[in-house]
Each structure stands twice: as C-alpha cells, then as structure tokens.
Amino acid sequence: MPAPEQNSVDVAVIGAGSIGLAVAYYLVTRHAVTRVAVLDPRDPMSLTSAQSGENYRNWWPHPVMTAFTDHSITLMEELDRTSGGRLNMTRGGYALVTRRARPADLIDELYRGYGETPGRIRLREADDADYQRSLRSPWTAAPDGVDVLLDRALIRSAFPAYADDVATVIHIRRAGSISAQQMGQAMLEAMRPAGVRVRRAAVRAIGGGAPYTLELQTDAGVETLRTERIVNAAGPFVRDIARMLGEDLPVKCVYQQKISFRDREAAIARDMPFTIDLDGQQLAWDAEDRALLAADPATRRLVEPMTGGIHCRPDGAVDGDWIKLGWAYNETASDPHADEPIDPHFPDIVLRGASRLHPRLAAYIGHLPRGAHHYGGYYTMTEENWPLIGPMRAPGSFVAGALSGFGSMAACATGAICAAWVTGSAVPAYAHALSAARYGDAALMAELARSGKGSL
Image (cartoon, helix red, strand yellow):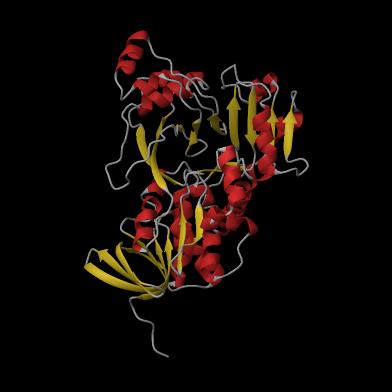
C-alpha cells in the first residue's frame, strides 16, 4: 500500500488557539483521526487564547448554553484528572452581585437556564449554616447549582469586602478558574504520540473542494497542503477563512480589555469567587474632570450611564497577590487586522467602576502598582452571542468559532462536538442549536431576539 503524500492530511485545523487544539485533541483521542495538521502563523495559544479570563461557569440564561458549558466542564475535569491536575482547576464559583433586593427577573432566568431540577436553585433568605459550611469545603466537594443570597447579614458574613449596599448575590457553584495555557499544553502533549504537530503557516488561499488544496505561507516560502476536510477555528479571522470557502459568516470582532496587578493593599480576598457587578453606573469624577470629559466627543461616554458587568477576581496561585479586573463595555466592532484599539483610559475607568463594589480598590485609582498589565483581545461573536460549531456550506468544511468571551471554558465541548461533526458521529441534542442550522429555526431566533440574552 503506497504511503500517504507528505503534504496531505485527512483534516486541516486552521487555528492553534484553545479551540483549534481542542478540535484536534478530540479527533485524535475520541475518533482515532491522526493525520491532522494544525495550522497557525503564530505560536499555539498566543493570540486571543493568551488573553483569556481563565474562568468557567455552567449557568447561562438559556438551557442550550447551560447544557453546553456543563458538558465542557465535565470534559475539563476529565482532562484535569488524566493530566495529573495540569489545569489547576478551582471551584470558588461565580458571584453575580446586585443592589436590587430579590430581583425576580434574575431569579426567573436561573430557572430558565437550569430548568426545574429540584435542589439546583437554593434561595438563602436567612443566615444559613449549610451554605457557610459549603464555602469552606474542598473545591471537589462544592455543590452544583446556585445559591441565591437574599439576606444582607448572610452576604456581609460570607463576603465582607463587598460594599454595604449589596442586596442580592447569585453564587453559581459549578464555576471557578483554570489555567487555559496549561489546558492547551496538556492537549498538545497528548496528541504528539499520534504524530499531530502544529505547523507554523498562514493559510493564504483555499482551492478545490473535498479534497481541498491549501496555499500556505511558511518561513520557508509558499507550500501547498491537500486535505479532505477543513476546520475553521481561526478565532478573530474565521470570516477570512470562510470567505476563502465562498461563505460569509455572521460574526463581528469586538475588542475588550483587562488589567492585572499585584494587590499590595490586599483589597481582594484570595478566596473571593469571580465576581460580576451586574448593575449599571455612572463613574464618579470631580467637577473639573467631568467637564473636560464631557467636552470631548471621544470621552463623553465616560460621564454618561454605563452598562454593568465589571468583573474582578484573584489571579494566579491561591497564596499569590495578583488580581484581575475587566469590563466588557465596548460595543463597537473592530478590524482584527488593524492595530489593537487599546484604550489608555481603561485602567482608570475599570478601577473607578470596580471600586463601587470593592471599595478598597479605590486606593489604586491613579496609583496602579509598577508592573501592572493592561491588555486586550477580540470577542468574536454572532449577534445573538452564541457560538458557531458545525458544518459550513462547502462540503467537508466545518467551523468552530464565535466563542465571545467564553472560549476557554467552552473549548473542550467545542472540540468534542466539532470532532463529532467532522467524523460523522453523533452530536449532543443541544449541538444543533449551536450550528448555523439555528438560523433556519424561526422560533429559536425569535426567542433569542426577545430575550436579548443568548449569553450573559
């Protein structure tokens, strides 16, 4: 039997971020597809994946997304076990915080996302010893579901660093943090014995059709690669690859920013869960600054009401002292080929906003510690903010992308689902709603348009 062509593979995965690596990993480990090339002009996990918030949670306002991330967390836990704890998983939870007392709409969304399974949603309306004990349990013993703290005394006891005006805390328990880089590295190491490697190459053109011929720009010059199937996992560049295949994907790229720094004031407790302030606000400025900002069209938005969603968490090792803050308030799409639209005002903005919930952070306004890291990355997203995972129009082509802000936590399920699509295997029932097929489901699209919250 003749040897396969050297420049020929069964599957070409375009993109070596967490999503592309996960697709290749599950092709190898679940479906024994080993003639796989992972193509990227950059080092693995060095673009969007390098800017990950490295958080995970299993609750979303829609049961499809809840099932999707539940599945992904199960796969992450499996990978963490088989890799000897490489993912550094924690399970401190997500705390969604508001100053609204008993917010009926948010509680209704919990039931919508989790369903009516008894015991999964627990309303804590008084100081509760069971809840307090659960906070001290090992992370592997943390409960599932969500605890809704409606008693201010309980909130003060459990989270004393929060501002005194917090009235409700929604504590999602199957949630926490991971090391996204270690997850990608563990996948790479598991694939190497099968012969899978990442090739440093940019895809410049795609010709033919199942089999396809890819024109690659490499350090050595232009090369070609023949492949039976293509997986478009190109992150912010999924539209570029799709257009080479004659398709325009309904996605956009929105640049979001974060800061991280050493918390020398010990403003954030090391055991604090990943916390999101759900409430909108107007930033506090002195009169002179407010007038200057309002006079400039480029900064006027900073004195106007701003959306909620500021998030904060301890960063790194439990015994470390770094923290991470973010606020995805930008809604303007950007061209990922252009220079990154980093905003020099962002550190001041996010600190002013975050100090409303975490008052001790105010000490850092105008005084960020030396070595603070200000960075950003592209949220590649559909209008409804659900991913695209599944077949594209061209035969033998598939997409795994548009994982806006939740790529790391959803990488494992995305990889497993896409690998199943590629090999013609069964996919979970929820997976069809995450493929482009949903655009033909008028009822689902109307539902998402009404809610305006495909994901949080």
